Image (cartoon, rainbow, N blue to C red):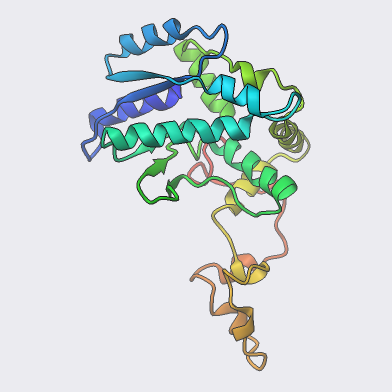
Length: 253
């Protein structure tokens, strides 16, 4: 979030479009959280900001059994509060600090534990249609963001809820991806690239592809649904884990 605010603040000075920034922090009343450190940092930026006081910590601790993952409920509560605040203040975009590694971890979390092939998009409209969420760091690697944060000297404050749970499903996924990166350089970039190269006709979701409409007498009918330019790539069988991709496809490869 620090990196996101910093980059958007710099971008605003030379962007071809005009936009304003308003920083928001949600104080969830976690014991020992040094909110004044954050307040002092935000004051130094010179940007308008608000610190919203909402005791979601007590709700999460009361509802989630001991030893169970708290991130899901905590995230939903935070999102609801942000949506409400954005609506009350007529804000047109909600910018979140998720990065490319978050997107890949979410992809595998949904596959392994939810039976769904989905991740988190760089841009989305909320279910109620009232809010647009953007993730400007979606194509950045976590390691590059961490390096930038260290150079800038941000007052990084760990989350007492997330950091205290050593066996989180997300942490297990992160460890898996790190091991893949060590043993198969380039694999992570390839996985990330797949998020924007989806071939519905090669999956099994009838909501995305009308399999019943295929003409069995036409050998090419299965290709008519594919976007132009994806016919060759989706049938390629020689993809390699060590294939390298350009920074435009995934910054920090």
